[in-house]
Length: 254
Image (cartoon, rainbow, N blue to C red):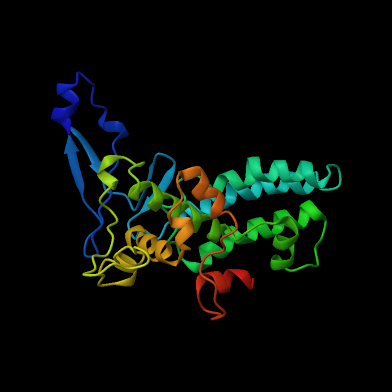
């Protein structure tokens, strides 16, 4: 890394370097770069995203919920001044935007953190409609809003579409592959990668992206462009079930 800096006539600033170790046995240590000792940290901030050693993104979720909560307080003070349309504009611009930055990275956070995020939207809808009695489901139906969790699922399948159709950077084009059959089938499905653990295998974009893609309607999968694809999945609410223990069911029944 230092050689790359020198070869490109760039000055190395070790004071801005950060070190984090993803090791179950040892998460402490240090390295020395140009005479500067860099200690290992339990959490680092990279391009606006807080990354922790356990990759559960608790710190990041807490931070974005704090920012959204402060802006939610402003919306609450204006709840009796602005009309619903004006409050929706504030909600989309200043509150919802907090959860639209790199959502795929922290998508597989814990259920408790997912509930924190959904509660922000729940409270915002209460202030928008000055309705503090209706349930979360009723307010979302009134506002024509989906769960924020479902919004992230739509983003994931959009990225799958871009990977399959060569719209993403080249190194992502091979992330997903279609199943190979000895005979012709009505529709092509993506192959699901094998995994050993839930957290480090099943809870990854490569697996979940392929699973979600295989759930979509065949006409949606064959969209001619990314804009058409996004339009067609705008009303898609993700996997539908009444199991009461999956993420969608838990968040819907808040």
